[in-house]
Amino acid sequence: MTFGETEPSEHRGGEGSVPAIVPGKVTFSRRELDRILGLYGRMVAAGEWRDYAIDFLKDRAVFSVFRRSSEVPLYRIEKNPRLARRQGAYSVISATGLIVKRGHELDGGYPYLVAEIDGAVAGYAYAGPYRARPAYRFSVENSIYVAPEAHRRGIGRVLLSRLIKECETRNYRLMIAVIGDSAQTPSIELHRAAGFKMVGAFEGVGYKFDRWLDTVLMQRPLGKGASAPP
Ligand SMILES: CC(C)(COP(=O)(O)OP(=O)(O)OC[C@H]1O[C@@H](n2cnc3c(N)ncnc32)[C@H](O)[C@@H]1OP(=O)(O)O)[C@@H](O)C(=O)NCCC(=O)NCCS
Image 1 (cartoon, rainbow, N blue to C red):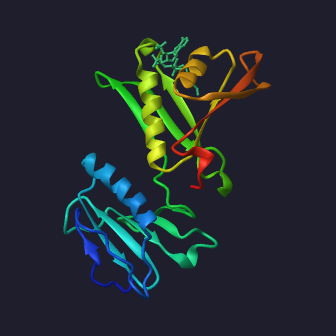
Image 2 (image 1 turned 180 degrees about the vertical axis):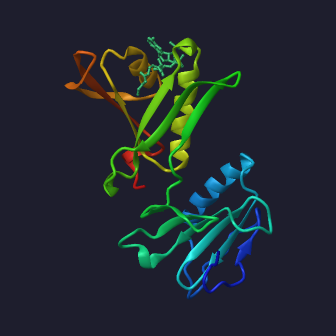
Image 3 (image 1 turned 90 degrees about the vertical axis):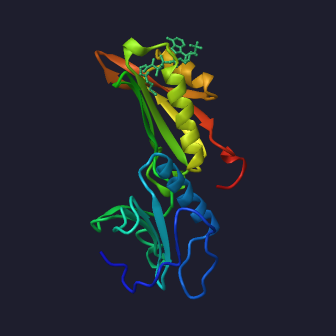
């Protein structure tokens, strides 16, 4: 793997200050670095990543993460302004050179949480894009499920509140719950208890098991919500 016109790393190490603007080179802004270091911190805490390097090159800025010092980076997060208009300036590249993600926004990805009881999966919660078009990039749609034998033990509440926190850390601003049937009292009540408000329902929008199903929509602001620009 090569960085092209590789130059010595501008900065290296898990601690210390962040480098300032470097003339004639592509750099990460303070906001971009906050995002990247937020993710880095979580991965360090999870024991996945141990070290990083930042390179400001003529055509791109590169944040490399390492599991161990002195080995090839596990991932590189690259910002290449020349690609900004078409493919998106940001890409995440694996150790083998594969582009695992490319986009216009430097987001922290989407969280996926699993609850275990004695090593067995008891439930999960995740967030994903609400819609693919860029205007909706600050909104997420969530999904949550707890195994019937584990109901009413507070697992759904813990999963949902953690999911909300994870999405707020990633600067998403709205969470939307699309609940499969208005008869889903547990889910509606769970979301209501977590600060969601009812938006409305599509009536007869689905058909399953010989009957028409409604879809209930609920929403909850994340962080500053729509009260401030992203
Ligand atoms: C909805 C679901 C995730 C709740 O999980 P859970 O772990 O049983 O929920 P918790 O024990 O954490 O309950 C948290 C709150 O949700 C509400 N709630 C949960 N089950 C409820 C029920 N059967 N009736 C009314 N309120 C209920 C209550 O407000 C509860 O707080 P309380 O126990 O203090 O009253 C679970 O029932 C489920 O997986 N259902 C099927 C899948 C589904 O509907 N997914 C939602 C699609 S978005």
